[in-house]
Amino acid sequence: MDCPCDYYNFGAPFDDKDADIILRSLPSASPGDRNSATHFRVHKLFLIKASPEFKRLLCEATQDEEPGITRDNYDKLPVLCLSEDRETLHSLLTAIYPTDVAYPRTLEAMMKTHAAAKKYSMSSALTLFRTCRTGVAPVVTTANAFRAFFLAFNRGLKEEALEAARISLSLPLTLEALGEGLCNASGPALEALWRHRIAVSPAIVEGFKTCRTEIGDLQGWILPHDKNCGASRTGLRQEHLSFFIAKVVADFSLMNIISFIEIMSSQIPFLPCPSCKDRLQLDFRRLFRCLERHVDDSIERASPDFLDL
Image 1: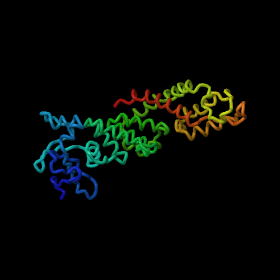
Image 2 (image 1 turned 90 degrees about the vertical axis):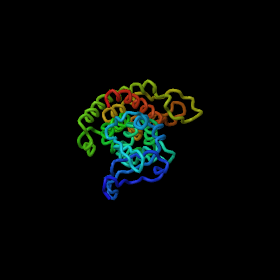
Image 3 (image 1 turned 180 degrees about the vertical axis):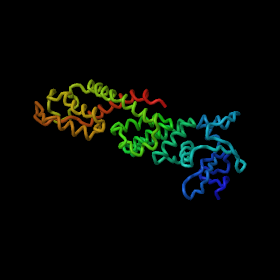
Image 4 (image 1 turned 30 degrees about the horizontal axis):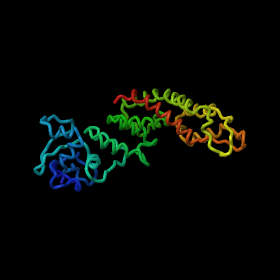
């Protein structure tokens, strides 16, 4: 059962009788899978329309192949033997076939699928998968940000690497914090991550500076307290933000709405409205969104030059 010709047929919807090509995955290393490669019986038209690389492989006269791609024949059909595993090819094909999309569920699966979509120039599929990961439960989190960065960097995924690097800013760059991420870390990746941090440190400060211009004197950031109150000036000033900004510059993990409300509330004294005497409160959530937007924009502008993939 473990002979080279003992292939596993994936099944519907990739087993149509009128399929005109087979995509063969890498052999599976999972227990019980007989160490067999998987066959996806598909239609050339779908591949050609979705991928310039598959169009080149299937339509051009040249037989030059990409590394890891070879040709074979099986059951009277041409076979492209690819370097992707079964799960990656499944996700990739569901993105271009009229069927339910099989989104990758783990960090490793996501990186492999995105890398495959990039490799075959399947821009629509890559956009689809990248859009999915920004949903309610994103795959990249603070807990796995370092591991995500190294996996993305090693596969040449700049957008994913930058996202992971941004999320990891709230963590110290120490051996303890890197943890199991070190298993995937290369020298160039570690250097890129370090240079990214050097680049974004002044960018964070610059983001706060540009935000101060939009915020002004905080008068427009006070929650409505009495529609009949005609007071227009209060004792609130930009200086009330200084303490929070100084803390975030020293520890970026505090750049979140909970820390913002706690720190700002501790710094702003009881301020009665000079007209109706009601307590004045800042719209903390709107103010934080403004801060976050400016800081994120500043980080984004500074990041790409320090991550050459």
